[in-house]
Length: 163
Length: 298
Image (cartoon, rainbow over all chains, first blue to last red; front, side):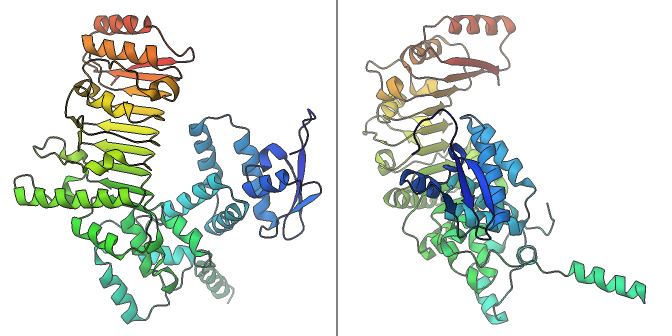
């Protein structure tokens, strides 16, 4: 960890498409992956993040700055997370969940996963396939067999509404 | 021609198929996402495509809402994951009731199944256990809980609603329990709640509804969690009885790290009764200087 100098330490992160980002160390160490690098003294120069592209990294840094500015109040943090994710499309959410997994940020990982789950819940199978672009690669016989195996899960409420 | 072109383009736009990013995610992330869904919906994702056939079986959270015994048993048999992280069972919609209190055999069968599920969850190191039977509140039949639950070493959050008898004769040991919420449970004896608390050394947050039934007198020995861990206490439905004041007084005096006590009282209380109660409580000595006491009518 950098010596206490009184001025906040800044780290430089590099995305896999060679974009550079400056971020306060105190915010960046929300990522356990980055924290470990800092603690091992490997964060002197530029920190390469080979699995995250610039667009996603910019978004993750916005989140890091936003959430670390909130004092220890779980409810305020939760409402920040909800707001932060509210305007993200499915593709961005998939990028974010991969980045959060690679950066080892459990709070972001949980929030994005919960958001994706929330979108899928109570929706018809057709709706989920359409929205997420999932190809149905079962043969009709296979599909019927899977449906028969888990018959009970197809009873009850489901919707094609976008809300 | 131009119109046809525009028409074709707009049709094309509508038909744009999003790129399937979810199916490309590694198994560990896919099961993590599924773990936020009620089990019924996570099992149902198996129909989406080949990639989705089995991930549900590796999810460590089990969340059953108004699901039949048969369905629950089926999931427990078919899943491949050993560990159970979260086990939530709620039955709060009358429309989906599968048992009928007038039918003793049915109640017995449900009791046997519930015992099996909880025992399984305890053996698989469950951390979060919620059992909520809010639609059963006015029934004669009260679901019991197996003894093994009360010595679960891994439990971090326990919520019981309208089920269970809190024992006094058996030892309670929840070495990791941080949150305890009890609503409409029964207490075997007046000492049930202090007995329970003394088995929860790191408890931080408790909400015992109708706590007065399980706690008539403050215990001789102060439970360890009160001295060092308990930060939040919620006491609903305080009517201003003498023994209630005794308990509040005791908790405020002995809870050394308490941050917040929330007391709610019935809306039927007169403003005079209300004022007297608040005045009395605000004068109680507090073991924790940082403690805030909030009052509110229910």
